[in-house]
Amino acid sequence: MKKEVRQFKVNYLLEWGYGVEISQIRKDLDELEKLGATHVEIEASVYYDSATLEINAISERIETDEEFEQRKKEIEFRQEQIRQNELKQLEQLKSKYGL
Image (tube, rainbow, N blue to C red; front, side, top):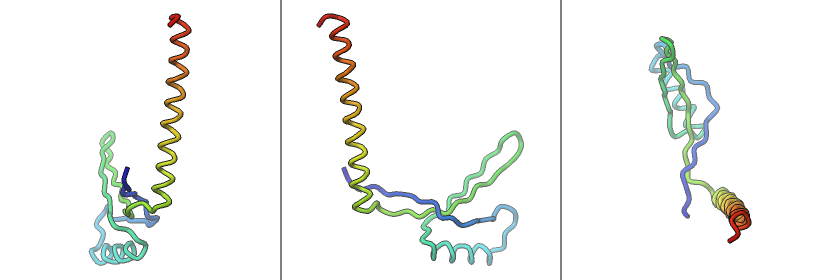
């Protein structure tokens, strides 16, 4: 298992949907960089003839050692739960079918 890239939403309002000035975009990007943002995600969707635009700033980085260890523990815990459930089911099937 190796470390993964993690994404975190940066709390900053981006209102670029309706004719924003380039100077405002530059200001917003400078501020986002100060806040640690590495990406801007823009998602457009249409729902019943109504278009929406969602713009989010994202900070992307490799998980820390602590985050990595925590994720490993959670995966191991879930795998052990699955194993225990499967063993329980196996015992129930053995009992049911007399094996």
